[in-house]
Length: 121
Image (cartoon, rainbow, N blue to C red; front, side, top):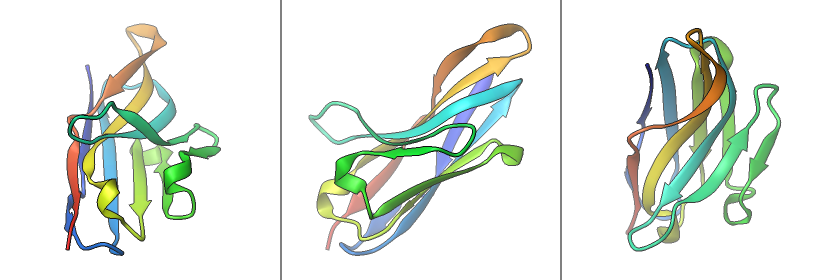
């Protein structure tokens, strides 16, 4: 099986920064797109940023210029550097990835358990 585990969340003041990490582990053949989503209380989950295996990135409008997604393919890890955080960034942040395993050679989508980010003064 494949597991995605996020880390790096916490409580920060407005204008502060956090760096989230997500490590994929298990029986992994390859990973295509990796992404970060977030879900605030009472709201639907929304995509924050995506990164392809080749490093092409896409950002939601509400984080452009503030967040940076990156990945280390050798470590099966994706990062989200979050700067200039705002209270409205408060949410549970989830890692998402399309992963192939040796036993099933199609991409399947996986979710991490989420990490809480709280931006408050």
